Image 1 (cartoon, rainbow, N blue to C red):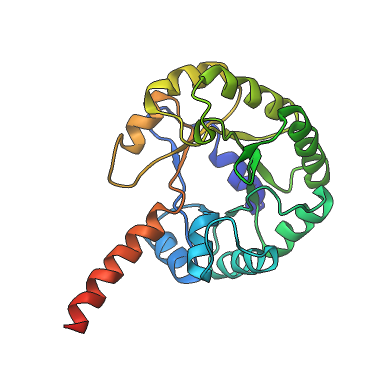
Image 2: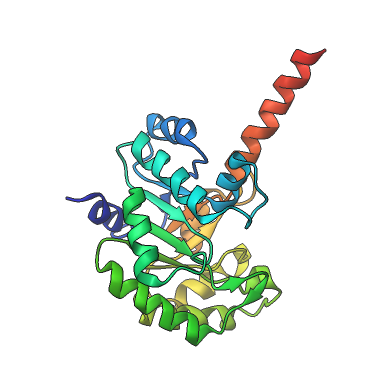
Length: 239
């Protein structure tokens, strides 16, 4: 089984109390830590990688992001999915080629740019082109940004999700959706649903699974917690 096929298989046949938990490495060292802990796949966070590279979220040059993903993928023997924001303005075929060259088997693709939601039908058409270029070589996780862009109505998220699934998305990621609306989203979305979690805060992975999460990611949360721990160590050393 290829890594891409394994990654896709990990999203299916799961029980509600056992969602797929994907920690987000920001460099090769953190990726190895997660694999050594027993995780079977990883999902890079664009904001966490940006911080590791010295950039603000959303300001990482595409070449540096793909190079960082390649270093992470080379460092481990498990499937790695990459958050590549809104695709950096690349044509679908070029985006797919660069992800595959970096060793990624999946990708997150946002439906907003510079803080504004994209037209969902145009975005769906673009996702369909990505799907066509990727065939079964990439697992496409279509992010739905309504909740983080001030649109709290779950039905709007479901409408967008339906378009993206029809376009070939393997999974839908309504980032920022409150836990209370997850059952509604689960009922209205066909296929796997990615839920954002805060490590050590809020519902546990099992609880989120019961609410409707197929898979759980943490965005830059793990990198930020590691940075806090490092600051505390540094503060003790400098005294």
